Length: 194
Length: 194
Image (cartoon, rainbow over all chains, first blue to last red; front, top):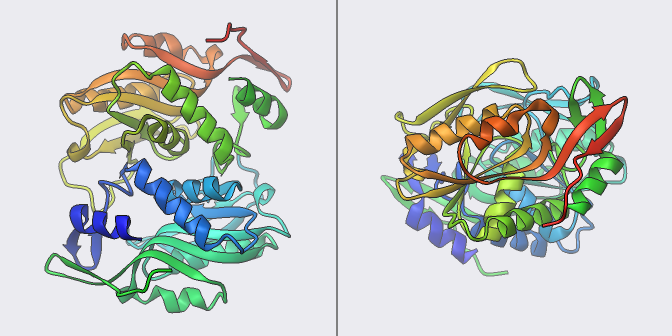
């Protein structure tokens, strides 16, 4: 997605150690116009997948997932990391290593909102190791639902998560695929337009 | 906002103790169409306020704030409760009691995204005690910016937060105002349409 790649080059920052700072337009501060365009593009790519629900993980997945859900016309569920008092005692729970905080996180979804028959598009801001997305897929399975696809805003291909996520056997779409970051230079994977 | 009030009556649940469960359409699971309508209505109500930025607190403020920002055509910033590694060491920080988790939370905003000259619309899902909104207003002040208004999806008038928030001296808009919840019956404040 050209607009996204241009924005990453203009405002993203390689902080070293594989960390890409995009908190001026994707997380922390969000550009809603860019995010809406990302949501529309994900909806276009999964238009034929029979998606009934979008699932993401709080916090930074919420903005792209909401925009994808809006474009698809389906509800979005964000897995919670802490149990609000409004959540029932029995929940679907999966754990994942936190990529940027060096800890395990729990992801919880109320059984009210993931059902057998749901076809779930998993959306997140980043595909890195794939651990969060695989945890979300386990929540989908716990609810007896099916994963219809995986859509992310930015993939860091050098972290190898795609192979792990492709084991789910569903289409995996990344709107910008970063091949390498080296001394501040961000290089994208060359791709034909779709 | 009629559609919102109808949805609260249909799908909201009075859990007792002043707790309203709306996690089927506002937090946890989000109805993006309803949320977009809420965002448009907030944008309409603040159309003349010269808003340059929307500010909210993660987590459940993100969806309505993003939709308001999209309708206003301005960026949205969500204050973080935990510092991501992409955040600079020097941040604006305010603390607030967490309404539903019986603890203090820290709210942090990077100085990169709140500037002198910004006119900030503070958006959240709930106005209850007003403590979160006042903490967000302190972050705005720390950035040398001005609060242009406060917009929330649901106000629980019986928690008295409006008086505290009105001390900011800016318009306070709630899209649905709940006067009382008693044994499962939710009663709205009677209002003329605007």
